[in-house]
Image (cartoon, rainbow, N blue to C red):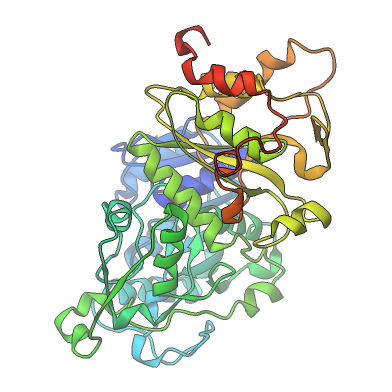
Length: 472
């Protein structure tokens, strides 16, 4: 399909573009040109509120689109521009609204799409509601539209944090790693229904193929409804540091901070209407999305992450931890079906997980291509579900990534590796779906148990510590 995104360089729009291109669609994006769009996206430079410029940009593409996604429809004027400008060019329109349209003092748990209590002031949520009313009016019948009301959307491309006073905080990871207390209103006990941006994008793309979604407004959220405190505690588990919460009294907070109305409330949503329309229901666990988000933020600060499966993770972890430029390693279970599996489940049940090592490295010292070449040295890349004497799906080989930019490097290195073999490679290469850290006794296993089982040659483990990366 040919897809158009209005607002092509933001969090949601970026994930829509990447998910669409992965699915084989061609993507155009209307952007003011201040930030680069993703590679492969056709940029159409215009201010979406400048109607002549927008029309000229769309006409210059000399095409018609199967669907458009408006990620910047902020008020009724924007809605009217969509209805005026888009009908000659697109068949279908998806618009991003917000859960802030609901009056926070009258929300149900969970809240569905219907209420008698919408925001009616000059706030962000009230303007979004007025935008929705334009589409709900007879004027809105000019397009086949669908509107979504997300709450907290998170993922690579934004700062972490969902609740006052630690919202979208640039230094949040440093704050947690230094084990400084987080100050949360009411101790963070109110509920939140977060959605991982990639998960949201996949649902948005699915809805354009569902006739029952036309002229519908949907609540949307991920598979987890948690307290705001649990959201931060999950980040703490991912980075390996406990989170301490300092409670800010909720009483009087809104009066002093009226802009926080959309956050100081229960934010749990009923997705029954979405399910009834046959639209894909978001399913990527919050922890999986937060892990990808943390990996992306770390990469901005010289800490890149990749997940490598090479058989029994005891020896693989020991080998990888010795490579110059590797900062951290952690053993775990990746890309299976079972939520939070145990070692015994992975070993004896059909969980689909691979024993995997999370590798955090400094790309300025150890580029990904060199890390992969060193990894190839200790695996049999054509062996299916077996490394050494260990046999089973959990011992398959793989390279799993959370940063989309890594995919091209991984493909290129696999092509070089394939050239050395007559048989096809058995190494999986795909985005990380989930990673669950292994039990404590599996971490640094060979340090805890010198002389323990290891299928990786000890000579390789010793030699890699002094490897000349310039020669790799």
